[in-house]
Each structure stands twice: as C-alpha cells, then as structure tokens.
Image 1 (cartoon, one colour):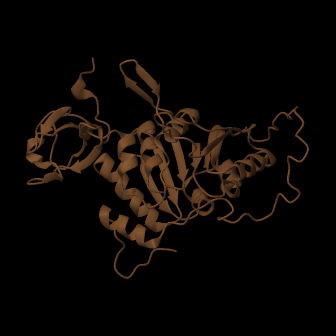
Image 2 (tube, one colour; image 1 turned 45 degrees about the horizontal axis):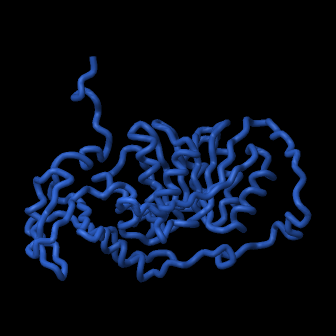
Length: 337
C-alpha cells in the first residue's frame, strides 16, 4: 500500500502549501478589493499612504491570514494563483491570458506525460500552464527566436516553480530550424504556436507531429486566422481545422444586486486547432461550397507584421524587465532588434 510519503512531490508543489516563508510571493487584498503583490524579505516592510506593516507579521503565518498595518487597515494575505502571477509578472512580450491558456490546455488535450513543443515563448505565461499539465514526466520544448524574450521567460518560469523544471527545455532560434534538430519525425504529441505567421511552419509541424497529434495556433487577427486555416487545408496532412475565441465576463455579487460587471475580458486572440492525419491519408472532401469572394485573388501576397497588427516592444522596456528578473545579458552581448 502506498503511503503519502512514498508519493513523489511534483516540481513547485511545496511552494504552494504550508506557512508563508521568506522569498514567497504574497498577494494582499485591501478592504476595497485592490491587489498588491509583495515578496517576503527579512526586515522588509509594505508601505502605502495609509500606514505600513513589517513582513515579519506575515512570515510563519498560514495562508489566508489577515495582517493589520499601523493605520488599522486590514489586508488578506494569500499566495498568488497561476492566473494572478501571469498577469503581474515582469514581461517583455504580451502574455497569453489565463482564459486562453486554459482553453489551449483543454482543447489541445495536454495530458500528463505528453510531449509538447511550444514556439513563441514570449514572457513564459503559457509555458507555465503547459508544464503544469504535462507534469514532471512529460516534456515541453519551448522555442523562441529572440534571446531577450527567452531570458525573460526563463526567469519567470523558474521564479514560479522555484527553480528549473525537469520537463522543460528552452531553445533560441527559428522553429523551422530548431524543430527538426530536437524532435524525430512523428514523435511530438502536441504543438502550440504563438507567432505572427504560423502558416510558415505548417510543414515542419506536420513532420514532427504523431498521427492524431494536435496543433494549436494562437493568433490575434482574422487575417491571420484565415491564412492559417487555408494553409492547413492546402497542406493535406491535417483534418478540418476549427477556430474559436473565449470571452470572460465577471458578475457583481452583493445581496440582491447581482448583475454583470461593467468591464469584461473580451477579445484577446483566436485559437485554431487541427489534428494530424496518418501518413498517406487524404482528408474527406468538404461538402459545403465557399461563398462568392471568400478567397482573395492573390493568396500568396506578402503580409507585413504591421498589417497583421504586431506592436513592437521597445528595447528599453526589455532591458528593464531583464534587470528586474536578474537575467541581464552578459557584458558585450547585444539583444537582437
């Protein structure tokens, strides 16, 4: 019979339980519902215009405790959830929102032990959800073409898990160049692409995916969505793609005053999924007829990053985030433009 002491501890699990310790991130909620995230340090203090308290008042207390500052303001102290951490962590590139990360994990069926390739790491938000899903026995190989974004992602992921994750590998380079070197043909279970032009990598992904494997692409605009779907269809190695988006609307709950919140997390991106067919299999022909004018006269026209809605991240911001995470580049090295 297996006892609790015989069960191996998953990476990062011990950081999520027990009393507050030095180095823990703590999310404080004030009486008005405003959130503040601090890192507990010996001798540290948390100041606002309405008083302060010492970190020692929290260290050693159980999660869910209340701390009172010098002005008698009460703060509820909890560890940040993954969704909280993602939205407050240092970032270079924009993050995949928790609502979209949850859909990717579910709709791509990211399971414990799965072999996953992720391209377009950004600040590491989605990477954490993928690692949580595959567990220590799985594999997530993240590929990022920018060294500075990769460094920021590594800092965020290792901060969240308390150190390197045994299931994670991170490579810097283009997906089309790196993927054939790190994955045998037909050896990958799932591929997640968060990039400007995922259609440029359909061939590399199709070669790496096992039959029945899932490709998920996260894109921001309808033009990207259309181009990706059509290239997946024309490739011939994927089943009919499906696309969707997720919107989250909170609700105000106070007595009988129950109503939708005035603000909501609306469009953040589209998800498009497709399954890899077995080699040599031809997908059943679609029966529906496309609408007149549905296809452009020049499908191979070049689409610039600006036309696709990409907003550049300034080098100054990236350098600041790297300094904050302690992953500044070595002297003499330069970040790519």
